Length: 128
View 1 (cartoon, one colour):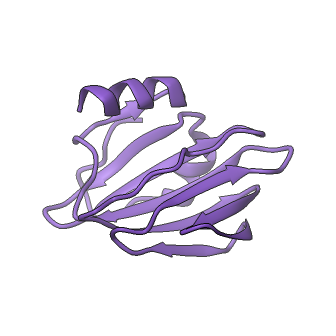
View 2 (cartoon, helix red, strand yellow; view 1 turned 120 degrees about the vertical axis):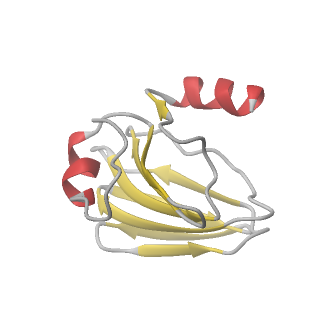
């Protein structure tokens, strides 16, 4: 799967097919769509995007959303809106991969970014 250059993408299928921790799907001038797969027992990692709003649509799996210290459960069909400046983390609490479609405004990651696992993503963030 390479980054799509059109405006219509079956992002649900992409999210379900990808086992990559992070895969940029499409990037525009003001927004970016990414699919993520979080293995059981793992997490995205606590972070804060000072200049980016982020939405996360949960496609498959079960997890915990932690926004500014407040926890709630998430599962397929749920959407979390993370305002810029909000400290957040998402943790897979289930037995299956937590599959997420996320959008950043403005874009957060370089065009074409693919991180196979969290360690690779963390290393790239350190270098970014």
